Structure formats: structure tokens, C-alpha cells
Image (cartoon, rainbow, N blue to C red; front, side, top):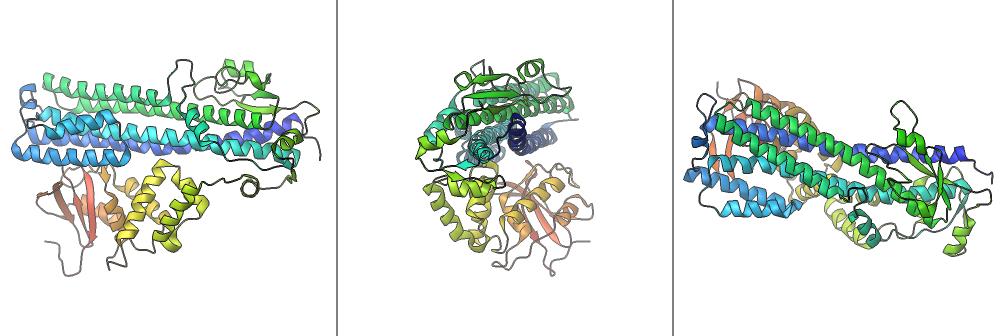
Length: 510
């Protein structure tokens, strides 16, 4: 076995940090669209509110404080009922859930109160999604980078031994522990950002009514605040990713009896002074402390730690401490092969049972066990996967449709439909899970799918038929119909409710 030099370790752990950094970037890709959707939903709600109650695109505070009529109150309660249902299914923050429950029980709600609740719901969903994504990121980064760090060291010394599964209780404590100098946990930072945005949202709505102004300035100010929240979310995600990456390496180094670690900075024009100063320094493992002797030293920190070995370290001492059995690990061994061979019980029994349950629903379309675990611990993908499986089980979605098709269809609908304005001036802000399945279609229900481009045409083409608004059980609905597709939209929220192919016997009015 050739002795690996310091440059080898720096190179291998730089690759590991790049992979870990990509987890953070992927996480932000799930956060940013949720803020964009919320921003569009809020703008649509404000514009719909002005369209219903304003005169000459202006509304006074006196008008804003008028109580909802019986019909308007009934419609508002249906919306709140849906908000509560969503909150329970997605574990939205309990204080907001309490506010919604109180609002649903009120007999008198003003127009302005109703608007504030409708717009705040959009913000709560975005921040709830951010919290879920960051929590999932923390667990994924720590778990993957812990095993990857051990793999790199074992491969570097060509000696391996069995590794126990990560202690779930220890991981829970680590995720729940505040680590920054100000003592704030990432959940508190998200809550602070949410509080600032909701406060700005409410203040802008009230101020606009007091001044009797059109909504343009309020929408512009709220959009600016959303951009600030997105920037804060990006900084938070990448900083937390760096922290849990650093903590995973600390745990791995300790478990392998690494005695010292070295700080390696990414040296370029953007490197901070603290990272330049810390670059190349090595410390005993007992002094390893994120933010002090180990990264992250600041937000967006790109520095990493690598093991620093004395000349007499062979890696076998930690192996003997484990169970005395060591194995040869070749230089070209792949991580996936190493994990299967050396990580004991890497997949929990509860996850295996859950996988078998979904395999029973999905049959040949079930992902591999390893892919299922990736989905399971990514909140965004997991919610989509559950909706996909539910559609398969009900027969609403063809059993031939796999999860990749479901996700790509959902993305295509977002890319092509969200933010567009219909031919009668409704801004599309979202879509139901039901509509995704309808686009794909179902062999079992003898229902063809539809093209997203045809949906776009039905909504925006002035020649499409627009049916009168109907009051449905769960709110208002309006249909747009061209020669091939019929699209139902909630005109108050801009949400696509469902889509259906138009049968040949049904003709569009000329």
C-alpha cells in the first residue's frame, strides 16, 4: 500500500465537499420555486380583491373594513377549510393553524381581514416548505457525508471494516442543536424571516387602503420583501449545509481515531480574510469546533476540513478497536459497493416495511429500495411521491406511468403555466395534484391525457370558450375550453383545479 500524501487527502475531500455543496444547491432549487409561487398567489389574491371591491382601482379603509356578505363568508370558510386541511397534512406551524381555526369559527370577517388571511396562507406554505427542506437537508448531508468520509479514509489506506448505522438519537440531538454564535437554530432564523415578511405584507395592505391608492406599490414592496426572503433562504441553506458537512466529518474522524485535522480554504478572489488566515492550519481533534477552528467560519463559507495524519498512522488501530477484522479496500472501489459491504443495517427495518407497502401499490413502477430511501428523506420529493402513489392506487393515474413521468409533468406544468394570465385576466398561481394525474391520463379509467401546450392555449387563446363562473362545494370554478381540452380554474385563487380532454361530440361554440 503506497502512503498517501497530504495533497491526496485534500483532493479527495475537496471532491466530497463539492458533492455535499450540490445537496445545498438542490435544496434551494426546491425552496425558491415555492417562494415564487407564493409571490404570484399573493399578487393574484390582491388583484382579485381589488377587482371585486375597488372603484377605479382604489379602495378606502372604510370599504376595506366592511364585513363579508353571507355568500362571501361561505366562500371564505371553504378556503380556510382547505388551508387547515393542507396545514394538517404538511405540519404547518401550530400558531398559524390556531389562527385559521379561530377564523373559521368567526361569524364576522372584514374584507381586509379575509385578504390578509388568504395572502398570509401563501407565505406560511412557502416558509413551511423551507423549514421542511432545510431539516431534510441537515439529515441527508450529515448521513451521506459521514459515510463518505469514512469511505474515503478506508479507501485511502486500502483497509476497511464494518461500520455501524448512525445513531438516530444522536442525529436528532445534532439537528435540534443551535450552533451559531448568536444561539439561533435554523428554525428560528426561518421563523424570523417569516415574521418580517408577514408583517410587511399586512402593513402594506393596510397602508394602501388608508391612503386609498392602487395596489401597484404594495405589490412591488411585497415582491421586494419576497426577494429578500429568498436571499436569506439561500444563505441559510448553504451555511447549514456547510455546518452539517463539517459535523459529519468531525464524527467520522473521531470514529476512525484521526488525531488531527487541517483546514483547507478555496483560494480565489472571493476568499474571506478569516478563511485565508485559517488555510493550512491543523489542530487536534479535541479542538474541532464549527465556526471557531473548523468551517463554516461565515455565511456561504467554502472551506473544508481534511484528515491530517502523522507518519505512523495506518488506519488499522480504529479497525482493531471495532472487532479485529479488517478487509482490503481497493483504490477503485465505488462508494455504493463499499456501503453495501461495510455499513451494517444502513436501511432501517421501518423503511424496508414502508418500501414494501409502496411496492405493493406501484408494482413494476416501484423505484429501487435505495432510490426509495432517497425520496423518503427529501420532503419535497416525498410529498410528490405520496400524491403519485395515491393517484395510482385510486386508478386516477395509469399504472404505466412511473414517478419520473409524474415529476416531469408537474415541472412542465409549473414552467409553462404558472404566472400566465388567462384571456379574461386571471393569473395562474398553482395547480392541484388531481390536475397532474389528469394531464397524464389513465388506461384504467379509459381517459386520455392532454398536452400542457393545449392547456396553455385553452387558457390564453381569445377564441377559447369561457363558461360562466359556478359556485362549487369547495369554492368557485370557471371552465376554459378549446377543441381538445377543458380546464377548470378557481377564478379567486388562480389555481388549476382539473383538466379533461374534450370528446369529439362536444363542440366549441363559434
